[in-house]
Image 1 (cartoon, helix red, strand yellow):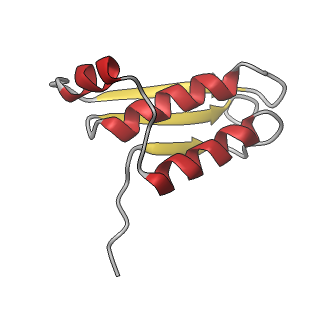
Image 2 (tube, rainbow, N blue to C red):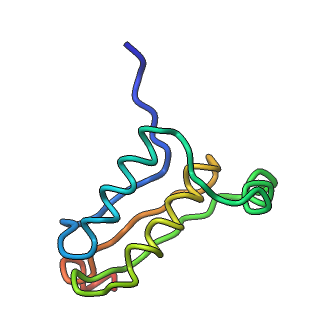
Length: 96
């Protein structure tokens, strides 16, 4: 059996409300190993020379958060230098 690989796609907190769709999208993306980013963005990410940690803060009622989470996590899929964490703001108010 192959060892699991951390592709930099993370969630902090319970993904409820609109955030649940971001969780499902992330599971599908990681299982397929395909980000669907455009070629220009993929090329940009291939040329990174430093670590980037993207943190997307979301709330269960925000209809815009899942798209922001998805975009950040697609970038993490494309570069080992990028990590993307979806952070549930109501559960982590000190971070938010």
